Image (cartoon, rainbow, N blue to C red; front, top):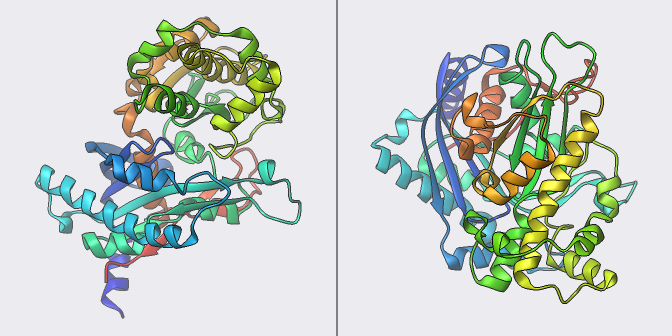
Length: 400
């Protein structure tokens, strides 16, 4: 037997594994690296976050990645080069983190790599009946495995689309596995570039169903506008939004987009929600001359309102569950306060109260998916349909 295959089998049989989960979101701010200790699999999964760090991307690297991300036309040569380059780069960042933590690569059983999404194209967006849901991530897992010497699992979203899913959001598989409570109704809200949530009915509630959906823009439009008009990566502490005033006419024009009326669940990305989209709708509504700080305030309110309205739509006739927030948006007090105001009957809390560092949640998610790929029985594509396809995630890349 090939020694690498034999080692793979040995790792899969381990009761407790050390797995590094990676996440690089549409904000392109850096690589989240979560070192996890995972015991068991399936409903017996237990996880401990041992270490977490975000390795920031350089300005030059952000520009290279943004030049090929979420746009219709780009250089195929650059896509090809960056696919391999990003794998090596992520491997180097992992090696740096391990040195900082004084952990040898041999102590890590595997790496779970999300990669970098450069285009996300579900049917809801491309509208071609004869074509499947599609999504594309770069950052080759074979290069990560060779650079680190650690078995690497990647291409998670491809398995989701191959089974008929939209490739996002993927949090529900882990949310329902680890965070369904016996009696507490919960919403696990992640505000990343795109905002999404999972509604988890309590185990003693047999009348309602789990649902996971994107709501629309999270930080992505705020970050894009902040970069364009204020030469900053993001609106730190919501300071720009606080100086501005929400333009209600502009906000209503943005919320009139058909996406917000589409049935749930649904997914989206910066391919739809970008500054060209904003400019087009504001021009059509006659408010194209909005001041930059008012635009940031209006986009922040757009995020808060579309999150709150989607939650209310799902929970229209149900008890008001606790909302646990994770992702970068948790650090924006303007968005956070507006969500509090829009959902006054919902207890709004940090995900850290039931889990771990809320900034690490998505990276940890992929570590758990990797653990299931190695040792679990897979996930039902639809939590509410026992006959839906069962999928295991990830392409396995051996280090040698």
